[in-house]
Length: 363
Image (cartoon, rainbow, N blue to C red; front, side, top):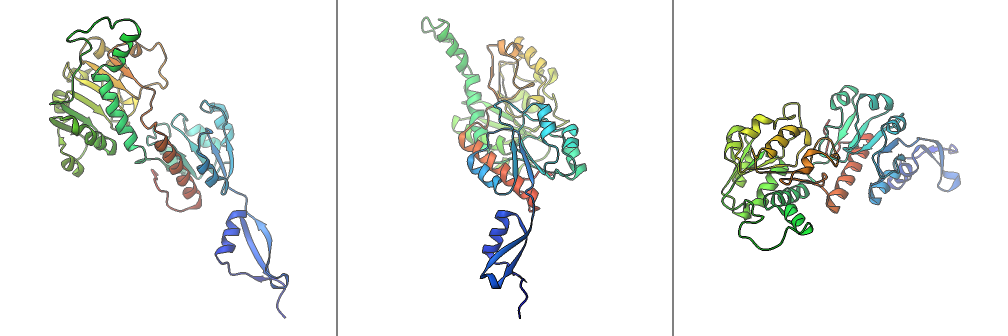
């Protein structure tokens, strides 16, 4: 006589059933014609999401695997709320507006296994503490490269051709008649473009600028890039790049070495006709030095998509300068790029908790 319960060797359908309902142990009763009896269940891991902006597709992927709590406000989650809500979570979905420091990690406790940030940059996260605690971190490289490269070209053109300034002239009545050199600015044709940090974004910017008949592309970095030769970019020292470039585009990462690297000394080394573009991180620039360089005409103009702090106060001195174009950190702001970033963050978190390799790990 067969025992009442015989352990079932799971087939695919049973495994699907097990995953869906988080069933830990399943037994099969042959006398009950295939009925399944759940003897124990596993609780879903806990996930906290710091904004309600995850696409429906991403939420659907997460709901199947996590017990989710989410900040519902349109503004970034208040720090006190973040510290409160991360207690006991297994995973955290955050954004660059969230400061994930030692205090937050201590509040989360030993249950925290993985953090997914919907950003390429990670200077808002204490990575050294993550490594000490064995917490995985996933980021979103590659999926926003094209969007940021497109925005960089647009920002460069808006700055050099004085588009915002010209529009303002229409609004304030300054467009009274045509004049031969009114609202003129430097063009890209026959120019030299220098890129500080020739990573993925820097390379894509170069590719998009080539049709503008730029004479020379330069870059500086810690090592030779094989891709540089393929797209026709020459490696030079930072000093040489600054001395020869008509357009200086900053795409390097923010590190202790690059923090406020663009200071009075570096702006002094640039051409007085140079256009300065920053799409990396605001912390790479000493903004008081940039202000002095623009006010004194040490450089011609600047275009910024990143700054410190963010958002920049409405009465900040840089916002009062006609030769400084400032955008509200919208480099990756295409619908598809933001959706792809969110879904990659979701996949990083799911993989990190399940113990499988993350698609885009930092640590």
